[in-house]
Image (cartoon, rainbow, N blue to C red):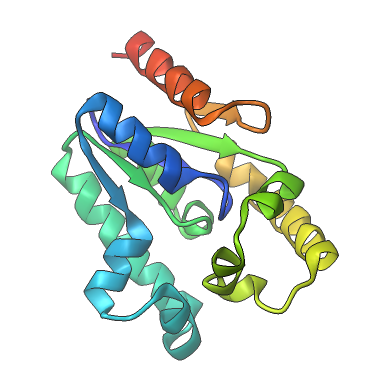
Length: 175
């Protein structure tokens, strides 16, 4: 098994499902945001605030390149914007298997805790209605990138366990 890259909008469950999937498959779980924070010694929010989004995307890209170059079996939760920058989605597809965890803006908004909103710079200060409107627009802009994934999984009606099972079933059919 090569790396499996989970893509999708912020808050769609990439980290949660990624950890569960990694446990089931007995492989490492990698969160690109956590690696960027470790490397920079600062939160994603602070990197955005003080160094800008462009710098964050460069750091994110270098982290993913390192994982991709290793070729090791692992589950990688990518940042929500990573597939939309440069040729990142193409790079992910060449390096491993890509899975898009598709969720509606309404469901993502309902899943986000107050801390989840606060730690995401683009969501700070939005009320519930503004949050769903912002996410709906942003998801629509990103959909063409996300939809390039090898597997598109509509997660709105799936439990985490069902989503994990579908991904495993997909991988078993493509090994």
